[in-house]
Image 1 (tube, one colour):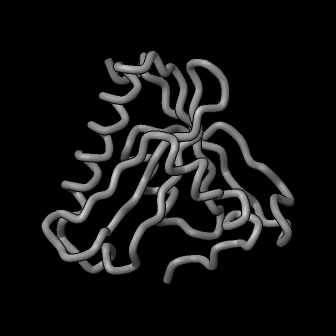
Image 2 (image 1 turned 120 degrees about the vertical axis):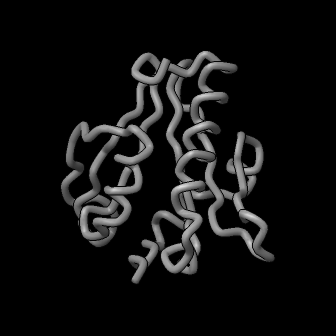
Length: 133
């Protein structure tokens, strides 16, 4: 089961901001999107990545292809736009998310304690372009 989305996250994900930045939708031939992901610039050379994953993806065999495609999206975007660092936050209480970002080449950087209204633990993962060239 997917974790509940914190209201603070929904408020922070202003649709106009997301729409103005690079994003990617992956359906793998299905009628509906399975994953939407994108980048939000923080400072030159650094972006925060986000992803919304359909619960149906856990039941499908196409997850390996998704990982390859999402990795290619990262690599191509970072090379084209001189992005050196991509960072993301993962809910500590949802192990599949940690496994997924690790498969994409992210590595653990730190824990963010008492994050958000629920004072959850979020884990910061980073992906460096130089590690993938």
